[in-house]
Length: 74
Figure 1 (cartoon, rainbow, N blue to C red):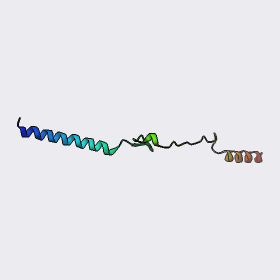
Figure 2: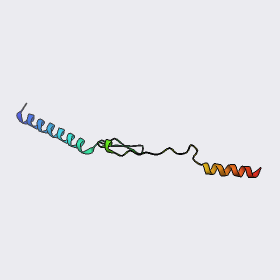
Figure 3: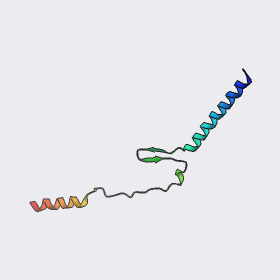
Figure 4: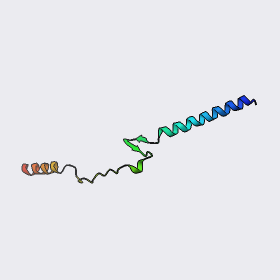
């Protein structure tokens, strides 16, 4: 092998490794999936979202008015 060939391969390999390292370092790792953004490097610092539990039946007023109208007809 010629010394120029060895140096050329070494430079090409070094530039390839540098390009890969730079691209991985600048892109991050957050993934957007099913409407959620899944872990990024700072996920431990994110605020927790809390949604309180709602009523078991979502339409209590509508159910009450339907029962009332059924009692009126009899």
